[in-house]
Length: 198
Image (cartoon, rainbow, N blue to C red; front, side):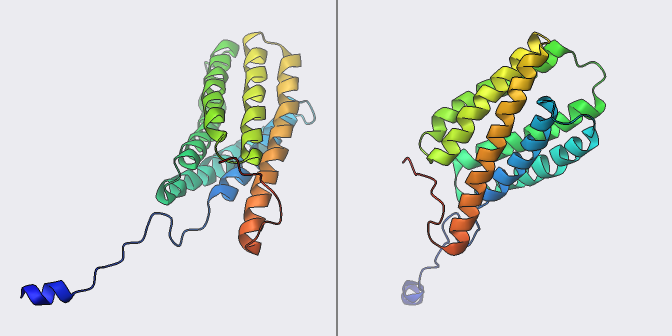
């Protein structure tokens, strides 16, 4: 009996991420589009249309990005998992706050955004080992959140507008990072640079 067991070939166990597409471009795209719409509103480029922002926040920025984060866990990418899951939760919580909150004050919203500023700042440190495209998104996003927090705490529409314009830059950078990742993966070569840092 022992001889039979010894002759059974070992079963190959797939490593985390085998056969799974990169969820990063999806997470970045969901983040970029939702940020683009909200930032257009914050910058004063559009008025009204809150339902469009809320719809994107729940579905594309929220649920799709949350799913991307779960797939990053499966791939074994801690940075992507924490980033996409957290920002997916950010957009879902944003939808909840604007849809259901009756007691949100400018200061409570300022504290909410300040918390996300702190989170984004320490994720920026981790992003230094990813690539320059992703790192730039996190640097500008940290500054965006900071200006929005200042705007809320001081009830200062000028600071909120600055945060809106910075958010538009963040969205464009995130779209580029998504575009580069999905294009390079599809073409199976570097078409658009991301400038790896690690």
